[in-house]
Length: 410
Image (cartoon, rainbow, N blue to C red; front, side, top):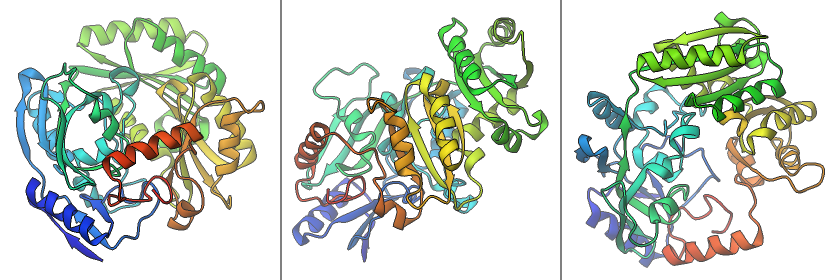
């Protein structure tokens, strides 16, 4: 396997052009913290994008930042923190989930989280990574330099290609530069904990809170076993957690209103400041399910009203642990002992007894053999598969960039 590490846009174009002429596909890597996501690749060439880094333009007053796609997230977040700002989509750090060394956390890149469209608990309020992706410059599988979007928050020219790149896992283009929207960091934060509720009651209260005027920015549920492992001071109760952010007086007022409206028949606790931040980092980074590392981990997106039901159905049929984020709309499941990693049971549960249920399951952590044997991403309908094939043909007709990362043979 040969590797190339371009230092600028021209070298990136040339490297992809050489791979195209040789008809040798390339694997795009940078921090290499997400190589365990998607189907495993064994390609003749690697394209190391780590040299395409550095903050290139940061207009804090305009809430817009432009950086090389391989700029480490640590660098981005440090610069934003100094200006009292943040990446509102709360990108996760999955180094623990993938059992990588602690040093790997510093290698995660801005372009990587955008290419995989990874978002944390604040997605329910601030939107997904793709909603903060304003523009980019990159090289297609045709070895053509192109750019899309812009450096302003409101951009209505042409197609919204940044949203297409978000979640493409490097199969359409190699990103060289990205522009994102950033937001002010909240002055204060706290988390209201409702303890001891069963899954159905907990999700009902999470959604009541989300529908209220109290501007909840995080809504998660951990069944008793997961809660006990993750939040030892709170004992073995199940936990329904609601995060509030904003000016201190506003946070205090909304906290008291949530307690009055939702906690009349259950025990409660409140996490302030850093304790609250630590809890939501654990939810974001899938810490409750990270150990033991031999368990297969799935990320299941469904309607919020179905999350708890699916978790219970899956746990009855498999040796599985689970918890909920996004008010019940995101179900994390860790499975032990199933030959297919639980794929058949989980996807049957999504479809439901009548076969008409909707949602999708992504295999986030599994052995390379498992990720080759079962669909990592939810199988597409024939219509969606045909559309995806046409898009791939438009950007990478010779299947040079990360072929097979998302679907075998493409």
